[in-house]
Image (cartoon, rainbow, N blue to C red; front, side, top):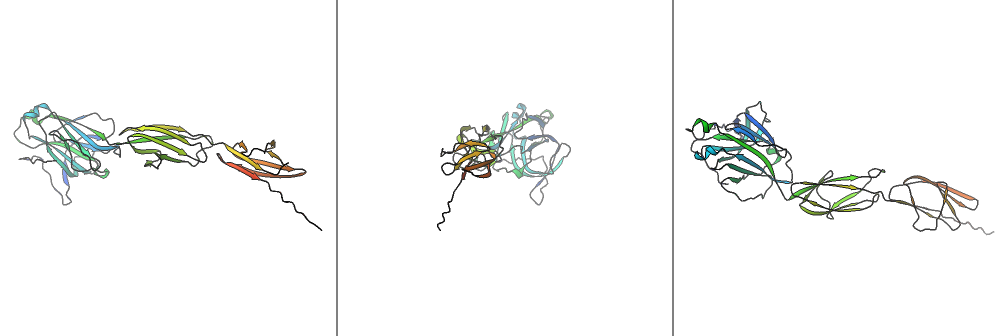
Length: 322
């Protein structure tokens, strides 16, 4: 961006050794980007604080829209916009003195609006014009809060012009990224191990929130304890998609491998043992009794959801020949 230098600057700044400026003025409003802020009105010399709000990977840039009074069009070069970062101490309505790093100085154009784009990642580009500009700095989380101010830079203007009122609003420019908020509903057995993949691979996630490129995606949930689930969903840039998936517990099975003629009592009930796939069984603690003729053998065991429990009874015959 081409920067202009005024012929006469009314704003006095004291530059510290660390490269920061002493900034003085009343804080008129504190804007939190991403919240439902309407535009705020302010005068020359007032400070507008911009907090980071919900800045995240789904935002490509922050957009600052400055409304300029119509009567200023006849006084070109009279006012300039100043932008600062790393403002300290934390701004408040009561405080008027701060230290900050100057980011931008821009004379107001002969237009009803000036739009600034503040990149939040490298490579951000849009078409610029006399009233639309992209700041050269990439803003990081530790650059906030920012301070914006409009200052008179020329003398000799009428008092009604000097008392002009501006308005400003702040919003996000979405990136090509969107989000998925996943809600999993588990059966009564509670939460057991499971794996989640998006488009066949692990996705960037925080808890149950995923950051994804806009477009169609496929969610896969696999688990030895629940039935596998596959869901197709879409993601819009700069927005979250909410997805609720109810997991179903896999059925547990019991298989008894016993010699022919063995009677098997599961939890006191005689069961059929000829089916190689066994039978469904409720998860939890169980007992089994094997009976062969006059002999009986009992066993206690536990079954986890979605598992198959196999009990084998091996009989060895000891043959002794005298």
